[in-house]
Length: 226
Image 1: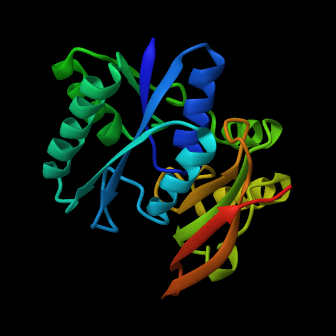
Image 2: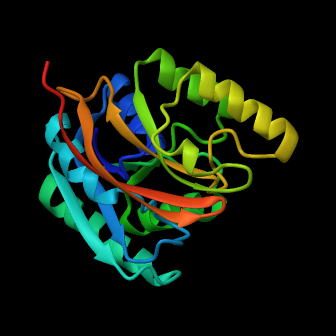
């Protein structure tokens, strides 16, 4: 079956794509939405432009669309780009990285139903600690690109998801109810390397903005030379 991947470049959508690939599905294209609304309910925004570079090292074509990020209206933009993927790549389904967001999951499912294609959510309701540990076990190199919850601060930007960070997030979950996998928007991420990449990426420059417990890091990435 040919699938399009709703792709943000973060850990969830990339890992969902990897799981679909492992099950034998053909990843025909990536589908990325560039939202002008940093607080979009639907779409991951930190460092979203890096999906172009990620697509190149995945050797998968990518379709992109820009949206103003208005609630519900952004779904119309998503539907149009999925229709384009059906037309250009003959996809038969969509794979998403939705884990806990009923808002995201139901709306994407409704779009797929209306277009008569399948919707796969391989991470749906997956245990958060298990998800992060699987990323580590499968050699995903993932960094944090934004934080938006106490007591997370600027010092977390650029941190890699490793065993040490997972232990820290579990501690913060116990004390402050921080969602360990960032599903409440506590943090966003960027994948620099994984089994789907022909080569890794590296951060060549970064710009940080924010204050208190809300920071965003925009990065430029380049190919990692071996």
